[in-house]
Length: 69
Image 1 (tube, rainbow, N blue to C red):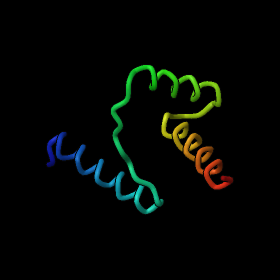
Image 2 (image 1 turned 90 degrees about the horizontal axis):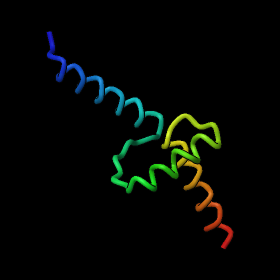
Image 3 (image 1 turned 135 degrees about the horizontal axis):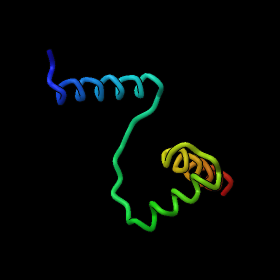
Image 4 (image 1 turned 90 degrees about the vertical axis):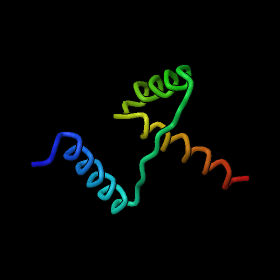
């Protein structure tokens, strides 16, 4: 029987494998609190589920702007 830590590690690895199959990856970012507050405000304003969705939208906006230059 796996320990809690081992079980959690296995679940995390399985989760990351599922993300990769979906063409996604996970990362950790160290940001100032004011930036996180801003992301949370945008998340609430746009009815998004998480900060990752906010970042995806911001990246897409910047990508679109860069392509128009």
